[in-house]
Length: 320
Ligand SMILES: NC(=O)c1ccc[n+]([C@@H]2O[C@H](COP(=O)([O-])OP(=O)(O)OC[C@H]3O[C@@H](n4cnc5c(N)ncnc54)[C@H](O)[C@@H]3O)[C@@H](O)[C@H]2O)c1
Ligand SMILES: O=C(O)[C@H](O)COP(=O)(O)O
Image (cartoon, rainbow, N blue to C red; front, side, top):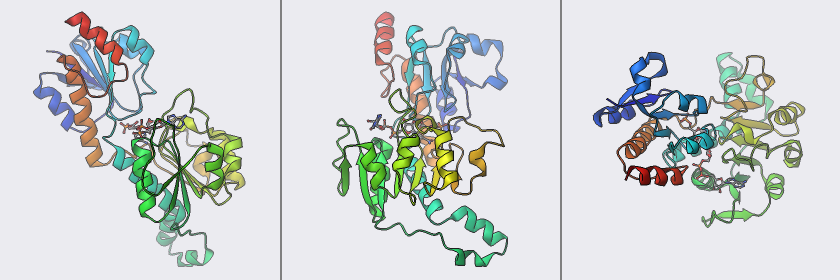
């Protein structure tokens, strides 16, 4: 019986679908030698999938990415090895957009500090100020794909002015969203900057010391895209110096960080462990979609979302 490696835990609905279709799911922790020998598919999450992992499965035909970002998968090696890479865009859009807004609220209303004060009986907390009303403030979005657009709609519904930096290929065209043409313009004009970019050669390090210096001292930076988009040492410096007001981060340069990592000691950050997509509803959708995508390749159907369609066509041509 052919098998499918599940690199990181996913919602039970995914493995159930694989089993029904005759593909035996297994985890690296419980793997038997036969599992590797029979392995035709792998499903991974943010941990990605390396060339070495691909080579450990000699019959591998497909890597399924649970979610959108495929930056941690070695696509070049997959192409060389004839392995198709599928992902599940759209399945976590709403959860991540809500999470970006939640991080904004957590910063503006100082929810973590307020919670701590309340537990300590410090009701004088409210006399010390620092809470922010958001309606009427400007929300700037970088990356107007599925999640950027959904976040824009939520910010607009809150009565915020919404600016978007988008590529020509992303026709913003959403009611109430103003398009800006440069990142500098967006950074200078926004009270909240929300990043929704993939990690690519063009976006890694995009928000560095210079860009942070363009932001308002009162501004919050939110990142639910990929950690590598921000120069993290420069961000830590800006937060420590108070040249921006705060940051809400779900993604980091390295996940996880050591306990003494300076970011973790800053009072003006709200951090979540790459969990923006981890609602029950989103986990279920991602697991079902990735299992289905993997089965499509194994059973010879065209999957709806592929990172390397040429490899799929070549493989299909060979098989036909
Ligand atoms: N934190 C999480 O759990 C989580 C969950 C889902 C997605 N993500 C990350 O968020 C990213 C966005 O997800 P999505 O579903 O919106 O993907 P998407 O592909 O729909 O959107 C990405 C957008 O970024 C734009 N873009 C890319 N490079 C750009 C650049 N240099 N300048 C301006 N715009 C640029 C693209 O044109 C596209 O519109 C993913 O690639 C992934 O890395 C993180
Ligand atoms: O790119 C994505 O969709 C997210 O990073 C989701 O990651 P996860 O599958 O580990 O939740």
